[in-house]
Amino acid sequence: MESQTIDIPLPEIIVPSLKLEPDDGCDRCGYQPYESELTGLTGSIYVAQAQVAVLLSSGGELKFCAHHYRENEAALATVAVQVIDNRDKINEKPASGSVHAGE
Image 1: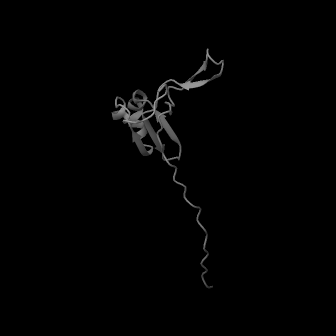
Image 2: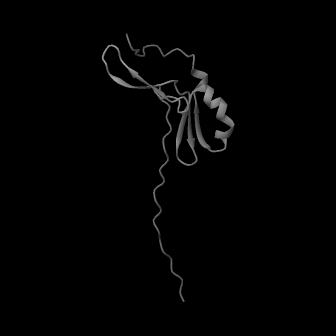
Image 3: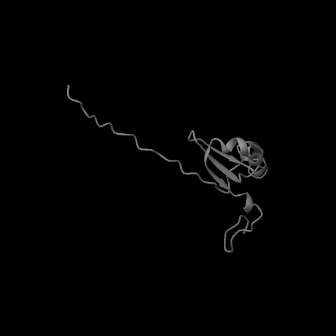
């Protein structure tokens, strides 16, 4: 019997893009509901700004404030494939010429 070769197309591997934006919040702190006294609009806001983003080996993503990342750093190291750590930038002033709310 002659052997056969079968070409099986492999699925394209999608690598998630890990980002850490200024409006990202800590997944551990969660969020709180709010209602604007001015407009009456309701919504929710994060309790703490995320300083660290973690891409997990499972493909998931978590974001943490400095406190919660420090608390979970050892455990996350075993499942993280990428980490963006901006804790050293917490007290940095914005770049000159950047736009700020209220200006």
